[in-house]
Image 1 (cartoon, rainbow, N blue to C red):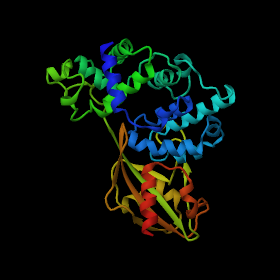
Image 2 (image 1 turned 90 degrees about the vertical axis):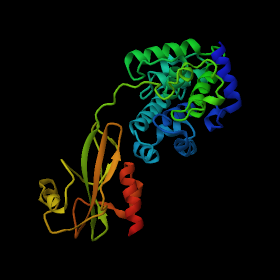
Image 3 (image 1 turned 120 degrees about the vertical axis):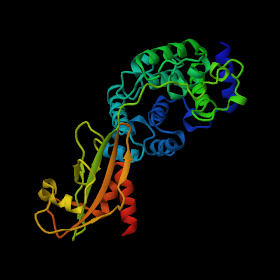
Amino acid sequence: MKFSNTLIYWYLQNNRELPWRKSKNPYFIWLSEIMLQQTRVAQGLSYYLKFTTTFPTVFDLAKADESTVLKMWQGLGYYSRARNLHYSAKLIANELNGEFPSTYKDIIKLKGIGDYTASAIASICFNEPTAVVDGNVYRVLSRYFGINTPINSSKGIKEFKTLAQSLIDTLQPGTFNQAIMDFGALHCKPQNPLCETCPFSDSCIALEKKLTKELPVKEKKIKIRKRYFNFIVIKTDNNKTILSERKGKGIWQGLYQFPLIESDKTINKEELISLEDFNNLFKTETTITLFNEKEIVHKLSHQHLYTQFWIIEHKNLAEATINWIEIEKYPVPILIANFLEAYLNKK
């Protein structure tokens, strides 16, 4: 009880003023929690405000087409979050009459919702004492209690969930959960934690044993895959280009891209022209220029994309049906969005 009392007292003095904290509406809490997965609050805030203005209710989100949702999500990354959000919004609107599930057990059944998000919504909106465990919580608990079990191991996930559950204030679980997340984000930070002014400094094992830099422990990262992308940016005489939607379960599902040729290394113009995939696109003469002198390295969680954008000027192509003046309407990966901004501003 002492831990939760100290934590909540700190929170009441230091909590962040965030728009979703002014509401107990599960739709708004759900939206904020999905957006803040893998995303800093500073980055996610503008997206939250944009989404809640455009889609003020779950019915509004459910009625939107997926392409619109993905376009508004552009830049946040991890686009499966947006697709799952849209899918679950349609389920809530159409099958649950707009009523958000009110228990952890039912909330976690929604597509795209895991233990952390279900716990956050259940505790904040419905006062159910279910503890959240995210990166901030792992850090606070591992340091305070001196736990070196890897946080990304199955043993660690269970251990920290059990510990967090044992500490939660059952009378105000939502406040406790928000308090421990804010404490990790603002005070017990990954780098340079504010140990000198910490309310737990007299009982923190990591501080006592000088282990703050070592905790929490993570198992070794998986190997990063390198991929080499060559985007073929077509501009015809009548100002048309080719964009196509990415299908399948890989990265950027549902987003649009220029024709893509993937190579096994960084290639030059002559090597590009010699490729069968390139020659299948163009049967007549073209003008080819490389837009970016230095390849762009786009880093995803499990892969790094070494990317070149090739500008191809061509008289006419039947497949080129997208007008350049409409291109910004399409949802694209941030990698392509950044290219478009640079290319269109340079023209």
